[in-house]
Length: 335
Ligand SMILES: [Zn+2]
Image 1 (spheres, rainbow, N blue to C red):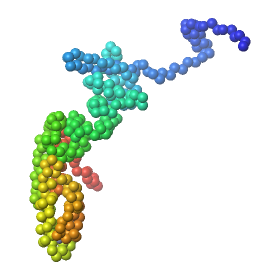
Image 2 (image 1 turned 135 degrees about the horizontal axis):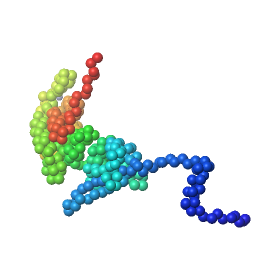
Image 3 (image 1 turned 120 degrees about the vertical axis):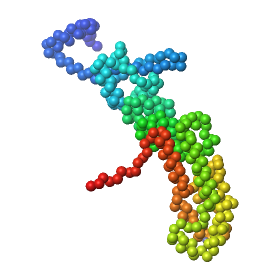
């Protein structure tokens, strides 16, 4: 190999001087594209008091670009703060969150494959709290669907409705939670669940009592084998021994069915009742009368009066949690 003369190492100063000369002589042109605007860095502080009464300060140095994407209201506020020389190391912007809450929000913003946001109840609730304060819609949607996917106990869902009742996204949690809770014997509701639903507990207890009363009435009435509408009545007239059918129906109901509705721990649901009637032998009942009765009963979805009781409980608990009631569908505007 031929020897090439080695260039002597040049100092930074030499290079800079040479560039200045070249630039002055128009030998080079320098375009500066500033992808990273240092003047868009902002310093945020959170403050909290720990168990020993000590104030803990935490500082977060952030670039505004990600906040603009995920929390535009905050980004806008911080941009204005920077203009008035806030959000600096000397004068940080103080936000009303705990370190854990705000860290969690930043973890969600920086969610990456190699560093995924943890889908856990605590982190999602923190995310929801920060996002709702900052009006960060994406964060709210993410936290709401995350919490729904965890299938938390109904009492906890109601408690969360209470905490976040100002968010319309959580209003639809009330109905399923109330329906679940009123199905359960009060004795099964633990102390911590009772605390979570404190304000709603009396309504749930009262509704459960009303349901027991309604089931007692149904068990005594036996859904007598008489028929509801005219067509069916005409068909029933074809049964020559229909009085016997009715008597036999009542007897089987009294001995084998009615008491199951009074089971305090787990009363029969309407669907279970239909299945039971289908599978119960009713000797001395004309099979076509039984089939017609079951057909009539299966056109209903629940015990008479049950839907109203449940709706009343849901509406009353919506009031307790300041959830606006869903009004009737809007009418067509008058032309
Ligand atoms: Zn009959």
